[in-house]
Image (cartoon, rainbow, N blue to C red; front, side):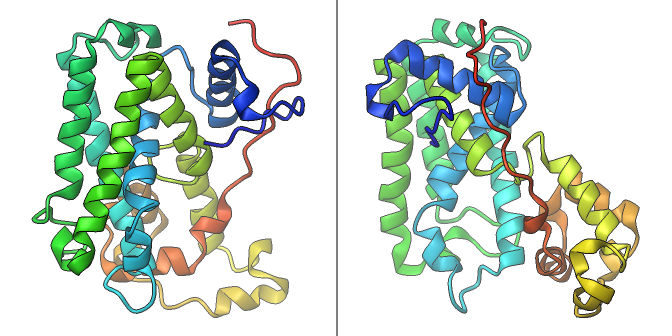
Length: 278
């Protein structure tokens, strides 16, 4: 998780537990754009962080490289679908634990550590299931090949660290830290507060050859591939990207990536100079 406070030269390992918790809350409020005291928002963003740590920043990167079955467009579909599924599992777990989405984040500390471990084990089994069907039509085993064992170890270590942090510090801090990681490392992903605005900018740009992002005289616009029928009109493009980008067909997903949706992202704003009094 990024730890630059933008306020002083204190190193991360010099932060007290109280200071680190305040830093996480500031990141969530000012840089990610969610209320760090609302459990539903924090857990939704924690899903993004867990997917990035357990799935995206894993041996999957090697499967994605070169001429493998995971194209850039395929990764857009798989990453968003994975986030959707993990978010839904966490939401159901929260509800089963009797925690309302609008409750205080500290209410997570009323949940027994055994229930937290149960959730992370469930996520581990889902992530590593060789028969898990990806939205690109292949299974995890199909794309992993002989790298499945290495991926399994990575997921176990990543999710185990969340349980350990919850046991050592608190449930709400463990999930808050995962949320801050997701919100900062993946602020351009589906499922984040920034995504709908990013989609709007992208949809406007691909409809306008004079948009400055295409360069002088729109030379980059002229090099785009033919726009696929599934996203030929702006309403279809926006609807699919905002609601469920994993339902894009292969040609449409590759067009979206080729047209540079990833370059539409904004940098995270700096932290305020004065700490919050929350």
